Length: 205
Image 1 (cartoon, rainbow, N blue to C red):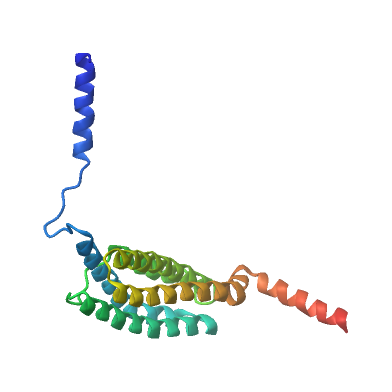
Image 2: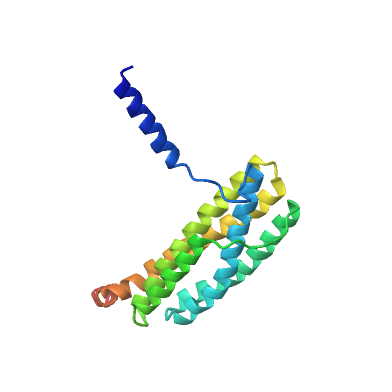
């Protein structure tokens, strides 16, 4: 190897080492630790949602959207109790750890409310913000289920799977509300659709 090659290789190794992130104090050293940290993360997130969802519900003008959000508030309460049960099962204290991702998604939801006028356009924005939150929760609960399975925590995994199924159901419901009650109105297509429908009725007569 030429001296120049040795120097280049040394620079590459130094560059790679400089990109290594130094673990914080108390960082997880095994999968159990990462599992617990992730539980704390979603526990904080669900508690934050309990404060954010009522605001979204009050700003929704579509009855079906407001109803969907109201139902999910009740579901979130159950999920919080379920998470507390999971903490008990694995012998850990139920406590939250700030979820930066959820904090950001809730902030984005607030910005959407500020950037839209009340009515179908704001409703469409609320659905968009809500589905981003649902997708994050689906990813998180899915990961927690996988961790629980790997750790042999079958009962905890069963409870987490229930929450995962509920988040998927909520996401599907929001899509249905958007397709059937909000997006056409927000885009101005509702008038055209109603006129076409009335036209069909006249033709049938």
